[in-house]
Amino acid sequence: MRESEIVDMISRKLSPYILLFALYLISYGHLSPGGGFQGGVVLASGVILLCLARGEGFVKRKLPPKALSLVETGMFFIFILMGLAGLLIGGYFLENFFLPGKIEKVPTESFIFFLNLVIGLKVGAGITLICFYILKQEET
Amino acid sequence: MMAFYLIISLFLLGIWGIVSKDNLIKKIISLNIFNSSLVVLFIYIGSRTGSTAPIMEKNIKNVVDPLPQALMLTSIVISICIMALALSLAMKVYKKHGTLSISRIENKLNKDE
Amino acid sequence: MRKIAEILIILLLGFFLIAEGDLLKPLPPAELKNYFVEKGVKQTGAINLVSSIYLTYRAFDTLGETIVLLLAVSGVIMLFEARK
Figure 1: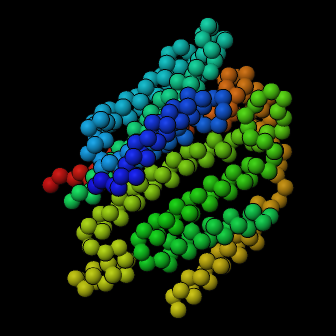
Figure 2: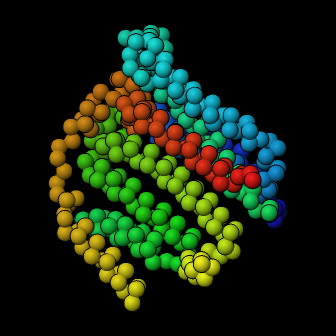
Figure 3: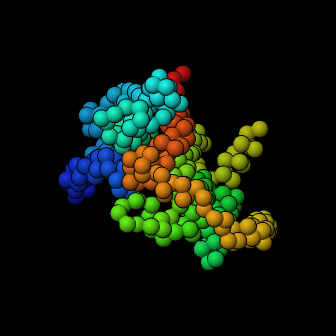
């Protein structure tokens, strides 16, 4: 399923900038509008643009679906581990334990920054997997 | 007040589309309109208490209520999941019956019995 | 005939929604908004108030929503890869 040359050329030039914008939205989530969910969806749409222009066999060689499924379930477990770390230190589940009362020398916003990264990767991998499986049926 | 009437008319258009259209994909698009109208309703009610976006830079007072916006983020992602599963089910129906029109599928199933 | 009945029922539903009038009344004073605006930046360290709400004060809803995403992805895979 290969599209015409104009679509192919423009999507190859445009897609790295879309991925860079998605990384900006995820990592500046605590200072400007954006965050984990918004950046994750833009990340998935950058990959889908390549998939629509070149056929999905090309993208599947660079990003195999088994690795994407491993990223998605791994990020879910890291989220739960961050919650349990709050229980171990002595507070409640999913507590912000970088406050000046409990752990010093680490800035307070690193909790939100880390959770934004985890959620951004999870949402991006999940929506890309959905689109891989829906677009596969076109060959039959 | 005009915004409130427009939001209710989007809600009713969504329900009418699900009930009275014949094609399966048009029913799914009406489900999406229906979900989005509720998100707009919550954000509109939350925006009546202030005037700027809730990002606390220096010397900004009178911000909008940030709580409905945080709840609607989750709701938008859930509506994406609903649409993904509904479209996958529509693809399976098309593969089995060869058509996407509900009245024709009904006639076929009633004739086979 | 069926189309006229559908349109009439939808208009009746709309009439009941408007006549209730619960959304046009003036809002009560916003106490939670004052709490978030005064203490949100100091307790979480983030300037974006919406991010600080759904990642510290209400992080459990975000956990439930990641579970919903996991279920949706596994539902789509199950529909398209069913082996005999």
